[in-house]
Length: 290
Length: 303
Ligand SMILES: C[S@@+](CC[C@H](N)C(=O)[O-])C[C@H]1O[C@@H](n2cnc3c(N)ncnc32)[C@H](O)[C@@H]1O
Ligand SMILES: [Fe+2]
Ligand SMILES: [Fe+2]
Image 1 (tube, rainbow over the protein chains, first blue to last red):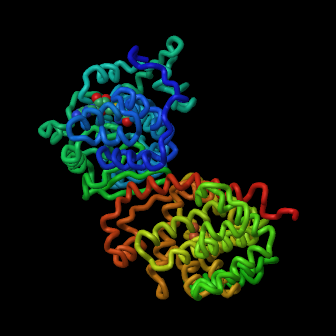
Image 2: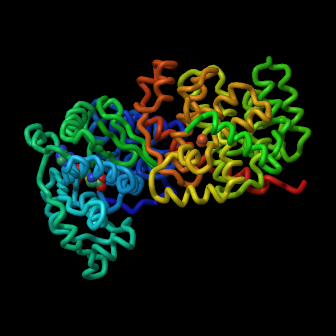
Image 3: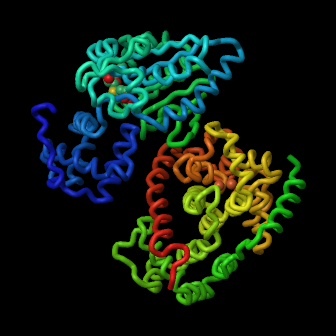
């Protein structure tokens, strides 16, 4: 825990009313495209308390005014987002999405491509951070190596703007926090706990993914990220304003195969950002396709 | 498969069901009264008051998070004042219908039926409001009963059902299609036969028979489409008979969506993502509600 972050005393957090909660939720949704479920109300309440302390706002209504003000709003919003969106990543972060991929979308794409004899699968984790999302896919695909994906070429590309996290991704060493969601089966099979709380990812998983620096704002470079079957861009676009979001998502659209799928993070939304993608619903979430 | 043959099979099957329950009197009256002017609604209140078990269920239900009263409501009279006559009918109907499913645990747990049926009722009402369908209460009621065929088919034909589920393990499938394959008929036809036996009004029968084929509806295609979509939305969020079928869908390809788009052009602007997230928020309320129906005042409570 960083030193400037006081341990939080939940009891002292001012209670948020339903009305204030809904107001802030709508604002965050409209500006960032991320939806706060009612079940997250108390979580939001405790995180807001820190920001209210930081800004000297006494009530939620005051804070709401503050975060919307043209002068201070944008930078405050970034601070709020840092508090409420866990700005980090882990393996197997979005289970319903992974189940849908494994049971439905992967077999479907393998079927389509297999028919035309094009046995290559390309996956992009955009805003990959330290690689957990990309490697999660690698493990899921490795499980199908002997069956569905026999004789297939697999390419997984992770990109991020931040070189530090990319270096961590290439190294493939993780702490227990990163693997907290990892099913035992995968943990035993693909990790080696070198010392307590230090997990080395197995070379066969690492081999499947490469990591490159890429700024999603870089239009020229974005043009070269071609022909992906699955693109993930989870918990990245929330910081972008609507017009940058539209531009980036249009790149994803162009770079996705006609039968491919584009995934965003849990509770994220592309409404008003792109009207070409279609929504495909699956148990526990939705994804986008062309 | 031939529709007429499926109907024939369903007819024979329903005749063979031993101890098929009858429809509760309250449920019938609520449906009848739906289209009549307000005065006769006193009758619903009287019916609830006359039946202790029913009254207890209604009170339990009105105090659930779904209806959010500020203070606990302890009497039927208070419930009436709080909800108004419109909603009290929904509650009376739902609570009286508990008896119809009672004791039909077979391949599926009755509780999972309730979660699905109640979920489809609530979501049908929400969709009805969005598209400004005039009778949102009807959308709710018909949502509650849309799968009655499933309750009885899976209960009276357990062996065939078990074989069906065994055959699809882990693969995506739509239940109606598999039923036709394994049983020569489906819960739509079975439900339709039962609905006719119970003298349900024609639009109710239509929804029960065509909720998986809304494009074939003639009496009220909008209503069929509403229930069809509500069913899809519920089947991808924990209100799906315990996760047996692996449904995915794309609104743009659903006939029900096209029907509703034509009925309510404002749907073109619907924020589908947000709509989904809002539905997610309702799920715990719906599950809670069903849990409360099955707790304490269980389906059969000694009075
Ligand atoms: C919260 S992490 C998401 C990690 C992972 N996708 C997940 O959902 O768990 C956000 C990542 O986006 C990266 N990012 C932010 N802005 C970016 C940009 N303009 N181009 C590329 N990456 C960016 C950050 O460096 C960070 O690693
Ligand atoms: Fe059905
Ligand atoms: Fe259903």
